Length: 187
Image 1: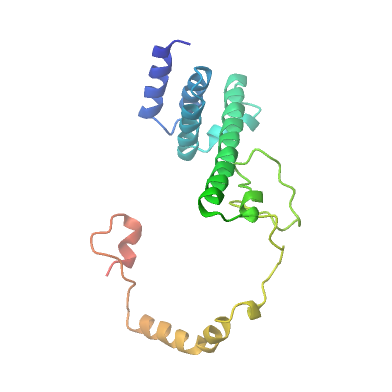
Image 2: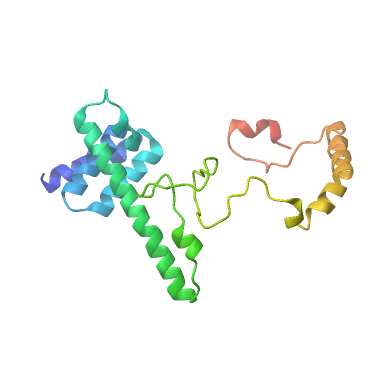
């Protein structure tokens, strides 16, 4: 593929980053040109704008070429982010002279390129999994010294809340905050 074609595809992607197909083809063109990190950047931006970039590979009704590009995008993103995690831990340990094995052994289930084996069926975090942490369903209140004082203040907290409701008070939102969803909260 010519460099002009690659540039044209990337420009088309930048015009419409929410179009999964454009992200897939622009990323694929970059990948074929040997620009793997740029391809990952395009695929990641495309996936952020339209989550189908990484998922269309599983859609059996999608065109085979699109599914192939989606598989490459997903694998490349996961490989890149797995290496980035390891490099970040290495850099931190080198700069701080502190070993962080729990973090090193941790994974980002949505973006690591390894299949995670969870210690318990219910322990399946989506964001970050640290297999070296104990799998506890509920932490005892005794582990948090501040819980007793918070529980003791429950009546006071409830009274303050009810008084605020009675006074028709509104939560503070800075004047000029954009977005219709804030109108009810405006002061």
